[in-house]
Amino acid sequence: MEVELATINRFLADMLLPFMRISGLFVAMIGLSAKSIPPQVRALLGIMLTLIIMPVVPPSPVENLVDVGTFVIVIQQLLIGIVIGFISMMVLNTFVLAGQIIAMQTGLGFASIVDPVNGINVPAVGQFYLILATLLFWTLDGHLSMIHMIVMSFEAFPIGEAWWTGEQFRDIAHWAGWMFFSAVTLSLAPIVSLLIVNLAFGVMTKAAPQLNIFSIGFSIAQVMGLLIIWITLDNFTAHYETQWLRAEQFMCELLNICP
Image (cartoon, rainbow, N blue to C red; front, side):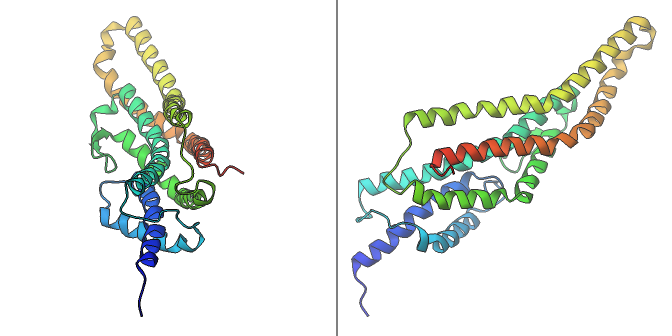
């Protein structure tokens, strides 16, 4: 049985280009982008998902794999996946940033551990929020939503036929502002509570200087910080859902799959 070279090129093109978009998603997506996950695992998952969706993906317009135009299209597909995964990472970093703000205000910033996602030292509070946000992502089927979104994008955002404009890249950069806005919103209640605690320290010091409140105030602020974090955990899920729904809407707009 003979197989023509054109048939082989067609199969490779129909597999390579969707694989690059999916690989870009897995490289930057929550959970799969951690340094603790071997690249071979991400590559295997990308190949498996590509083989599954190949029958429903429109045929690739590429005729010649060894071409400058094909290389440009490959880079485009890789960037599309990375951008979508990067938006999900900004959702996760919202809570890491909120944890760092709270840790700095409560004096808990001295306790730092290694972040397995970024490979850097972060305050333990930020790592705690990171774990909670990651668990909510998997629990609420965020990974399935992103895979469904990237599969739908092949019809609404065809390979080699559509690309983002400069305004859309600007919107991607501006959307990062929601990360800081949401982080401050999440950490606002602990910050205000600790401000009240510090004001109480000031009043006690003024009323009874012999107590030397500042010598024990640091330890009390840490204990109060842990208590306030525990009390405000009820709002964590609501903040996560709001930020994730906002990210999903933005990703749908970028990929032209909004209902």
